[in-house]
Length: 158
Image (tube, rainbow, N blue to C red):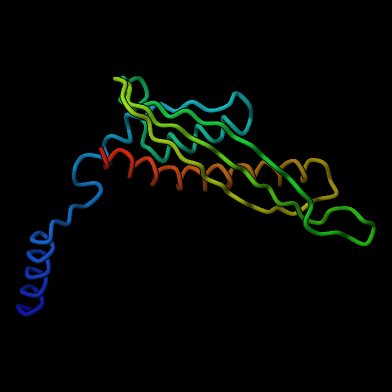
């Protein structure tokens, strides 16, 4: 037991000596909550904004320190065919470009992320709509995870 504690202490000292700093250690993780998100004004944009605000831990009502502007392109294509030549599955590809600027002005950071999800086609109209909406929610969540890491790295790099 004492030996394990000594190894853990030695590992901690060696990490601090090499200059290692956790990404969340300098307050960059807290800075994420000060990002104001702007998305397209449509159904997917709403879902994307919600996913980004959840991923950033947004403080609603607080003055933003950063502004995140987004542009989204969607493409839906059939990827499987049934005997009657109707689509069995669809692939939804969402490409999002983003620009992060400090609220006080200064240089902007930008990037592009892509999420690809598939969903089954249903014969019933309500089930088909539900499947498509579920795919949009999954794509928005995937984009939010990817953009969160990019934005965190951009904030930590300043």
